[in-house]
Amino acid sequence: QWAWHAQPVSPSASGQSQFLQRKWLIWGDQGGVGPALAQRFRSQGCPCLLVQTEMALLALDQEKVRSIISQFKLEHGAITDVLYLWGLDAAALPVMQENQLKQETTGLCGGLLNLVQNLLKETWQSPCHLWIVTQNSQHVLLQDKVTQAVTAMLWGMGRTFHLEIPELHCS
Image (cartoon, rainbow, N blue to C red; front, top):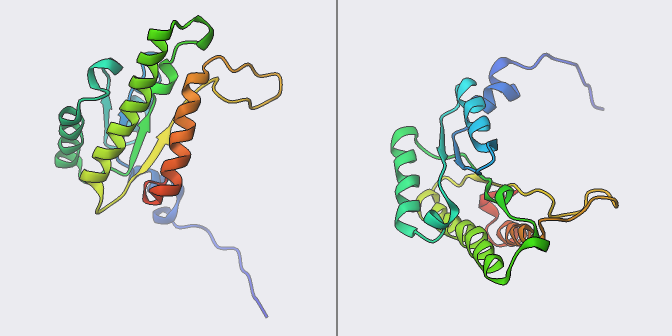
């Protein structure tokens, strides 16, 4: 027979204390979500590095990405969470020209792949959570319009990472 008794949760086991132990690397967007989240995390006492640059400058630069990850680890220790916000900057598909579509997909997908490859090289001993953020790339409700379908590729990559690299805890 089971006996159950309600007990208060100690502060050390609360969600707040677990949140304060997080160490965030944010691949920032151009719309301001990244800086706002970084400010919020820092105000809560969480170490946080915001990488704010143009997608084209960083997407395929392996050395630069590796350097950013290494710098964070030196200053704060193991990364616990990576927030990839480049999907928020994607242009609407109906207005894209063919060359712009190629640039968007190379930047978004190449940037994410570069980040993941370098995370695996630098954090393989203590894997982190990878959060991929998009908007308007999937229907939530039937009446929702999909205007940034190019970012749906990030969803596909996220699903692949979830299956093939489960230690990344990709969401």
